[in-house]
Amino acid sequence: MIEFIDHLGIAVHSIEDNLPYYEKTLGLTCEAVEEVPSQKVKTAFFKIGQTYLELLEPTAPDSPVAKFLEKNGEGIHHIAFHTKDVPAALKRAADTGARLIHETPVPGAHGKQVAFLHPKSTHGVLTEFCMPAPKSGA
Image 1 (tube, rainbow, N blue to C red):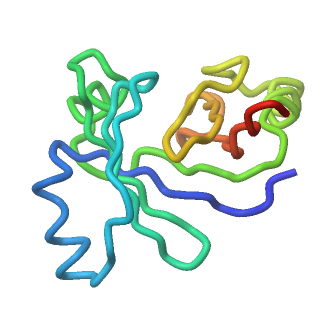
Image 2: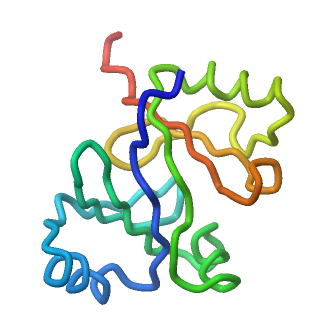
């Protein structure tokens, strides 16, 4: 069901302030910066092999990432697993007792459909399932 690690989400106060580290120190290239209104964040993506690093900057004080930063400071926020079927992954997780943050996929960055599992039921790791959004007319 899970095919690979899609990305690691890293919460930051400012993407602009963090870019020099990822670009100059690590030698990575920022492929895209985009705002994701459904999650109240701005994101920046760096591809490493098949996996991305995703920087997450809150765009509102009530965003989940803003709350995370307030409580934990900057650092790893979540791990995202790529699957061909987020609803099936959610069902499987719920059937095993995992607490769902989203019962159905919501729009995410890079045009993906995403859904999260609550870290209180995943041994402290905020877990995301993601898949490409269905193509128009499909």
